[in-house]
Image (cartoon, rainbow, N blue to C red; front, side, top):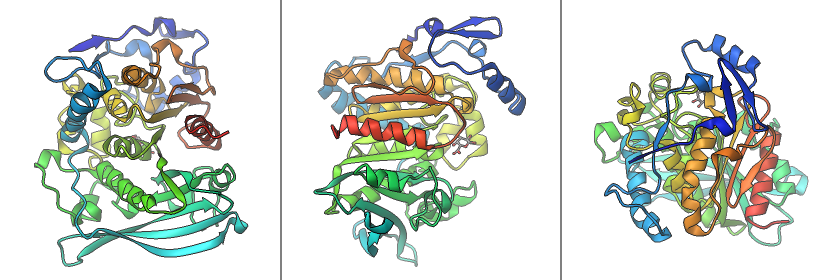
Length: 417
Ligand code: GTR
């Protein structure tokens, strides 16, 4: 049963082609005009969108509404996850027997003595002649920590220089030094080590190595393979004497953000999920064709989702679910959605609508829901209970400012002051 969302009139008023605002964030005319030139044929104005109707997050297939946390957890949430496996991300394999994690290296004097740096290898038994498929991840923990530390696991979708474990190249994409100084551990998984990010990449990587028992239409895609690997890293973190595995935040940017959401949805051991500029197939709504659309993402990145998702490009209203329900499956754990002013391709406002709709789950756990009229001003972090949201000024990136908001959010949720 779809519900009508309130029109955005309390946030944005449409006057012909011009948009005037209340104090909430709204895109500037200059950015809209630039994107309309750069990406003709796509929508960057609210008044060009079709009316939005979304499935209710608490509604079960049988029509009943979850009114308790137990009903949500035992009925609606599992149904929702199954729909996402079926039509968006595909079915992932179970963990093969004999799977193990080996220590590769340890530097007890990393970052001039501020951190211990360890590297691990995940070894997955596979049926082919290679017998195993393996990939590595790196972990930094503060030397001065009195006990186990909470940790940010970055899913790195960029080159190694964006998240260099050797620290020869420093980048705001992975501010290890800042995180260590703030008392956090941090780990990085380089996503292409698990699965190549190419349309023709499905004949390589973990997807080629590890068979999955699923119909063709719901065979796992690249994002699901990356998310599965993130869970294997969490397996390793669980046996670390220096990491508090009950306080691990999985964080990713863009395609890494989409992956972080799916990892958090499918693995409730992740206590916090942070999706930065995740956009279409991430926190942005498929039924809102603002910026990147389902048709376009499946055309340009045909390897990311399962085959079934391609069938909805021409009419997203036929999708049995939408991305707000993906966000809902992460609740009542902590969830932060960050995006950027100039990144209209990723639809910051659509991400906020998705988060507010997902927040219907929060009151079942005594936590506050969000209202659509709470869209914050630019460069202001909105935090309500265990939900966070911001629109930063600037473009499609994971910046120092974004990280500062995420660390402050984790400090608050995990009461570290
Ligand atoms: C964009 C793409 C997005 C996003 C991004 C990225 O071009 O359209 O869906 O994933 O790239 O990962 O950088």
